[in-house]
Amino acid sequence: MNFWESPIIKSLGWKEEPKGVAKVMSVCMLIVIATIFIPSSISSTKIGKIIIFSSIFLFLVLLIYVLLKRFLSKTK
Image 1 (cartoon, rainbow, N blue to C red):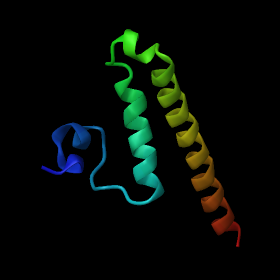
Image 2 (image 1 turned 120 degrees about the horizontal axis):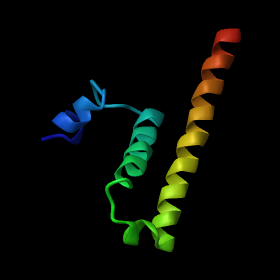
Image 3 (image 1 turned 180 degrees about the vertical axis):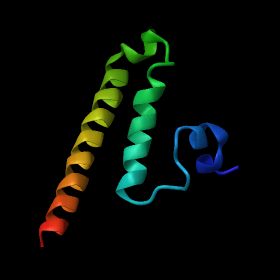
C-alpha cells in the first residue's frame, strides 16, 4: 500500500499525493504531529529536539515561500 493511500492520511484531509514543496511540508507536519505520540524521553534528547525544531523551521520557511510566490504571481 502506498503511504499516501492509507486511511489515516485520508482522514487528515489529503485526497491525493502532494508534489514538490507540498510533499516536504506535509512530511514536516507529520513529524511534528508524531512528536505528540513519542515518549518524552526520546523527544527530550538533543537529536530529537534538533529534528523537531528543524522540521518546524523548514515548514515555516516553506509556508512563507509559498505565500510570497502566490502573492507575487497575483500582482503581476
